[in-house]
Image 1 (cartoon, rainbow, N blue to C red):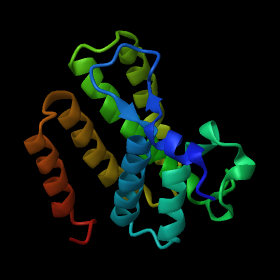
Image 2: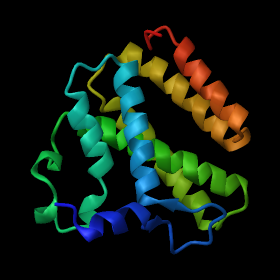
Image 3: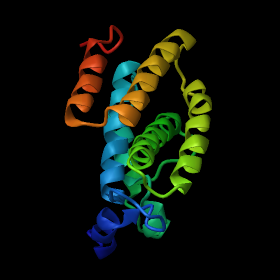
Length: 174
């Protein structure tokens, strides 16, 4: 409990082997995945354990830094859990959003290839979500718009438009 490695985990940089325009730590990435997972769960009116979902989102990369035996028991989630499809979509969304900014701003050329591969995986991950096809179609439209926004309008006002669009969604319940 309260291991020094947890502090290291929060500041460990992602994508460190590439020339980047913007740095992203695992702590920032985990935060983003938790936010996106919560938004996904809200959009689909998911009735599962929201606390477990957010804990898993926060800890999902810790196994790369810490020995799995060192993780707190409440963060250990089986790979076939109902949480995994949501976390995988959230994780891919964060990668797509980050990579889109890097490609747009002239980051390492390899980012474009990674972005193409990660983006191509997203439809299958969305298809694997345990929700109705009609609802997934609505979600896909929002995701497409958000990706376009990150690729072309990545400004604070652009982020505000994405959030406003989400809140106006009839399925979001807001």
